[in-house]
Image (cartoon, rainbow, N blue to C red; front, side, top):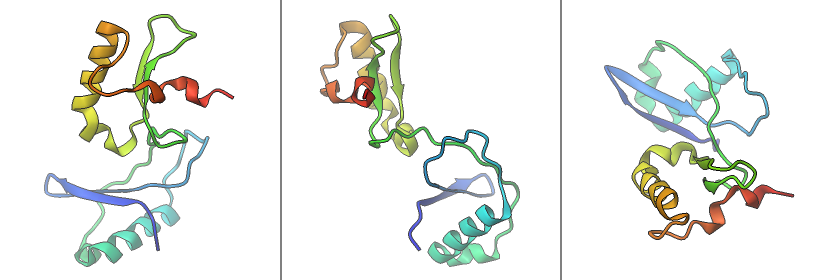
Length: 126
């Protein structure tokens, strides 16, 4: 089985999650099939979790782009709007450089630390 799965310590327990296929549905409901699939992935990767109990469950969407790269830069059709989104699961890890790049963009109209010209929203225009 190959699924995107993660876990980390959270308080006295473990927080875990699992990615699913892209969807247009923003109202994803938790269901037993989804929970069982995640438990199977968890136990396969960390067998001791078989003895764990579940406290709560929720679903949500992850902000991913079709090419798995973030969007960083201005929106040509909306004056003054600068996007910094689509980082997915790496958003927390990449936050320091993302903040630096946005600060450069706001101050200078472009970035200087890293060339972000390929990360504009225009790349998704048909």
